[in-house]
Length: 307
Length: 305
Image 1 (cartoon, chains in turn yellow, green):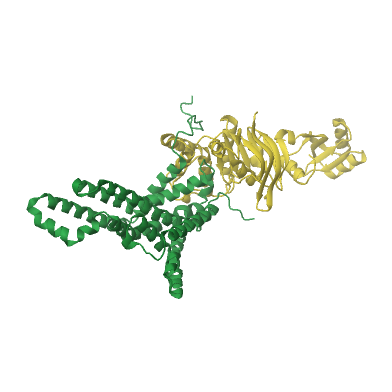
Image 2 (image 1 turned 30 degrees about the horizontal axis):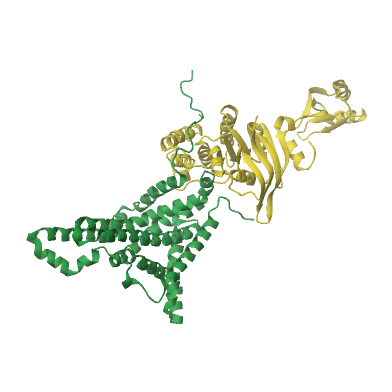
């Protein structure tokens, strides 16, 4: 897949405080998750890609457009959904979406037609003629998504799109985003601190900490199988299993999810596991290679460890 | 079989085929302003009647003069009208244009500033709409130009537009032999310039107040408070304390009037104690300060660090 975002020594400062420290990355298309704790610089990166926050140093290109030199052209190609509540005052959902399309340079008739279409897609068909200020939090999130989509952007920048949504609304919004990315050819950059959201929608992630990119890559590669380790489920006494395994020189421990993890000095040996289970009087129910969850990857990266 | 895809569809239109963003903002802003003005119908009707009353009276007098003087049966009435002095008040000239714009219509422009102008930026700041505006292909300059144009439109509708129409009516109803056409056309240009100057100063003052607030109401209160404080308390007090007429230059209203009188060539309304250059400089400084404040306030991201 082609590169959609190229960062070359990007620095962003707010006065004397440096928010982004010399970022370098080439982000490929598809759905990209932007992960990191609060204050990591996720929103600042998104805003600087849009040109809302000026770059203090370096160069950035989005969809082949220079952030510094072609801000207007760039913003025609990007749809942005801000994190905080944002709406045009006194507008209905339809008016707000139509107006957003007009501001992006669409002709009136096309903006009207598209506004109806994207509001339908966002699930606001019934409420589109109500003033946005009367909407619930979930509906406000949806109208922001509709505004970001109305001019059919090639790249969607979504800043915490599921904030304030109930589980059902969250699943629905994530479903819409997944549809856009998977089958409609819209690239998505999703900033979130909710790992499940990113795991559900994205193929790759950029992990940030204290204004720096600390990890960047394909989710499947980051969640790689840890060599020489497996995760197992046994019925019976875990303590005796651990004791027998230790006596036979195997590194067994209770994993973060309460199940057992077993690390071998060399290649994994399934026969040895069965032998330990038999000696401990346990029944081995499952045995699979140890695969880290995104949460474990993130915690490891943020703790400064090596995944 | 799917007969209609209700899911997301791509749009292959040209994103540069629509109008410029500032025009979109202006267009929508004027409609919103009109709806705000006409929210209270009785007030709106009374306002329109009062604002256009002098204009309608002027048109009526000019037409009456035309009618009487072209009908021999009304020769007596024509002479009475011309000798009565009323006609002099509406016959377009530098003095009458100044009187009309500066002494009468100014008040209606101020009312419009409070009703329409106060919320122009404040409401966008309250609802974080600036972030959406500026994430579109809209530059800060275009946003500001559009907002100033919205207010400019409303101010022009009660100042320059009726004044220009009055001149056109006068030109249409007066015998070309009794009038120098070039003078009238020139006057029209000066009226536009003088009205434009007053409108610019007023618009920037309101937009500055609006950019410093997050509610239309507080913006209008601070705008009125600024005018009262600056014109009445500071300007008046300083002049009285130092007993120096040159300190009139501290008054925004005085400087606007001075520049308008100069542009409209109205010596009767020009104060010789303060040179027009001083007034123009004061207004230029005011404009620059207002623009600097507004520029600092119109930003998509609130930086708290």
